[in-house]
Length: 219
Image 1 (cartoon, rainbow, N blue to C red):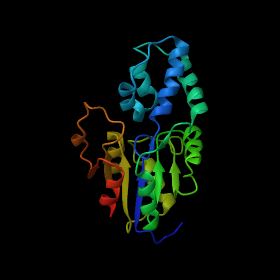
Image 2 (cartoon, one colour):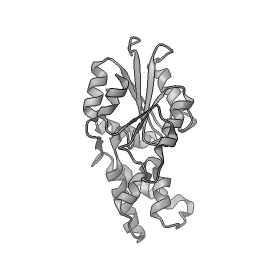
Image 3 (cartoon, one colour):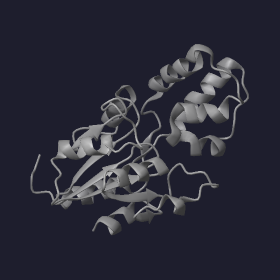
């Protein structure tokens, strides 16, 4: 990797770089049909996507216990079978990545999603060979909001004190992780955010309403 890249931009995956909600919702509905549980509207489930399967289940299962994680494991198998069928980069993100690469900036992905799902998904989106690093939920010992995954990504990219680094995410834990890693934070208002969430309390360094606004921030 080049030592001459002066800026590093790290992205969260779900709700920031890639719109994974449709296929995660599809997997949920297959599971709910199997379990004969009433479905919830997409708009109710979408804000929970960034909180992972447990966040989705907190809304979808109506308090029903998941004994021995049986439904959790079944959901993961269903979701794995659907990976990449409807997930896509958010509108404008292709242009954002192209501009980042044209500027010779480094970019990477830091996600709490495990390698089992993140790697196949990134491959299907033809991004694995483009990104400078992919740090998954089981790459390090800790998940965001710990700074460890971001710090690990920066070490892979060889980002140092001469680099300006940003982390782009759509949840408070993303912003907290960036702050703990002592890099700049960009909050994505187009992501999976509940309408009841007061995002100003996140105290992000910047807020963007669309992917293309990321370019305005990083320069």
